[in-house]
Length: 218
Image 1 (tube, rainbow, N blue to C red):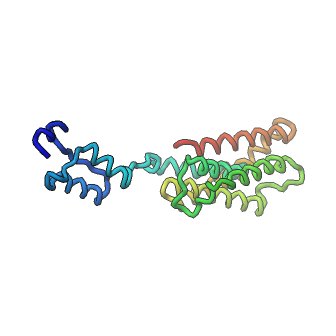
Image 2: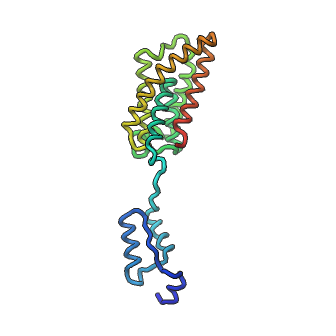
Image 3: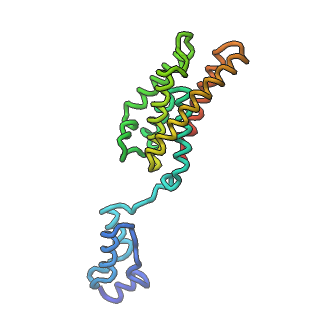
């Protein structure tokens, strides 16, 4: 390359460019320090590297794990109120790309059909919760189901934040609190209204609202 050609690209034919990848950075160094035949313009080099592998971009969500732990506990609390609402919210978040579960065994929650299945189950639960024949949520089978759903949902949010086990534990704790606290609040509301239906509808609304907060952008 002649001096005139080099000047046409600006004062310096090259500037150090780092892509966070040793192989790519090594390629940049060889191109910068090697023979003139390898000294390409910075823009052209970046274009070539972008074709090989795009620059690594950090996920800002993973820099704030405490947000995910809080979200895991909150989604567990939702499971204590409505067992199927919690996994329905998490599965929609995974399916829509709000959380990344691709590197976890919980990636199935984001499959195309899963959100619809959990949503259908959640809607059925909204109806059956108001039936007089529905057992108390504090009996072992009901309590256990809520803890399991809270653990699953919390683990998913924990995995998205880089700590599946912590999310699982937070989800279990939240589910236990939501089950016991929700049962107590439901009794008080039903007593205040004189019937159970208004209390059930309020609890439905609270569960959906908290689920939206838990899985929304952190």
